Length: 286
Image 1 (cartoon, rainbow, N blue to C red):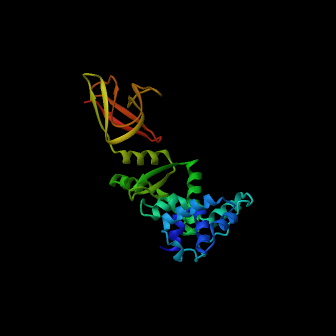
Image 2: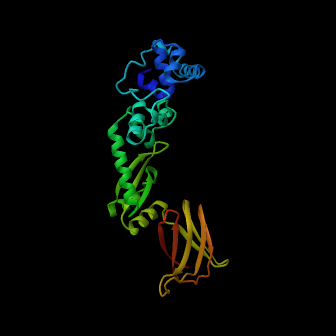
Image 3: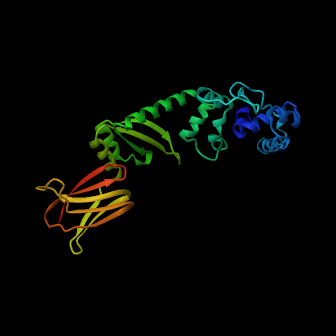
């Protein structure tokens, strides 16, 4: 076990107690230095032994102080920090390293949040932190003016790639998600770009009209969250004219709505997705 791995396993207090114990200090001395009771020190020491092994004092786990420096105030009467001082204190003590300890133990993959915590704690690549912070601020600013489409790597079908190439959509943010997938955030500067991209993601639905029961059925190949579906004439319609309208606010593959349509007539089926994408499909009643 390396000093870095040991620091990942222990909390701030456990590290402080174990480090002093490894230098041969008694429980009473440690309790006095940290302004804690002897019983509390024993609990921290017991917890450290469970994580590092009962012979952790014999390991050289606390000698390296370069990236694991604990220069933060450790006494119970330390002054309250704020602002920049608090951030620097957390970076020195590795307090935020708690967010990625499960990754260090091989239980889960490292998410973007974990990598940020890793960078902030001073145990990882600081450049990654600055890069991700800049991406987050940029994405936040752009999302106020434009729409951001988040797609996982599995959503990049041939149709989606064609739309990305056609509109030259660029990635403003990229992060690692669960199950070894990467999530891409595409900047869509117009509604047309956003609607076309989302249309490629959900795919073209199978639309059919059952004249016997007066029902229009819109069926996708995958579950899609739909707010509402409207049907209106394709030509000669007045502004705001709507022949059928149905709210769903649910995620499923098949949607049905009551409508009285004429055979041979052309209509526009408008589908509003949960993310705000507005998809229009031309439909002719056969």
